[in-house]
Length: 176
Image 1: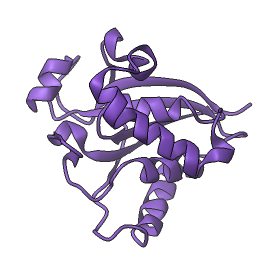
Image 2 (image 1 turned 30 degrees about the horizontal axis):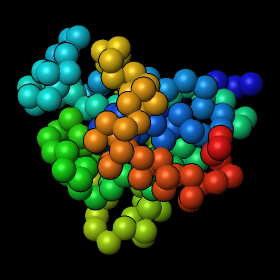
Image 3 (image 1 turned 180 degrees about the vertical axis):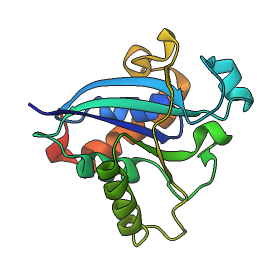
Image 4 (image 1 turned 60 degrees about the horizontal axis):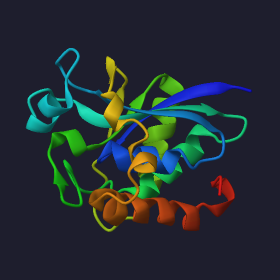
């Protein structure tokens, strides 16, 4: 087993977390914040837009089962990488599309996939690719949110369709 890390911002971390919890080879998914200047930000501070941080998920995955390229192909399919600082009705810099890399190899793969995905979307890709800086785990109530609150309005109408889309498009990579 070869464990690697990926850190991705694709809008609300509840959505991204819920999808990647369904991917074969992903061992752990954690919601958090990165990309900003404030030390130990709170959710409220991040939502106010004063921290510069992005809502992200940090994945630990077995690259013998699912590659970093696979992870990024899923990422570019489950969110809209063409909307700047926005995913659906969620607006603000904390919802920007971002890939935070942990190695030069990851950065090269991320740039390559972003270029390839430009052919899929009708608008330019605005996904930021940057080295991972300081990362902060989000508050405990954000962890495993969709699984704990599947009937909550946002989960039922925003998160669940993203999970369903993942299962349909990537059935061979899905746990279910």
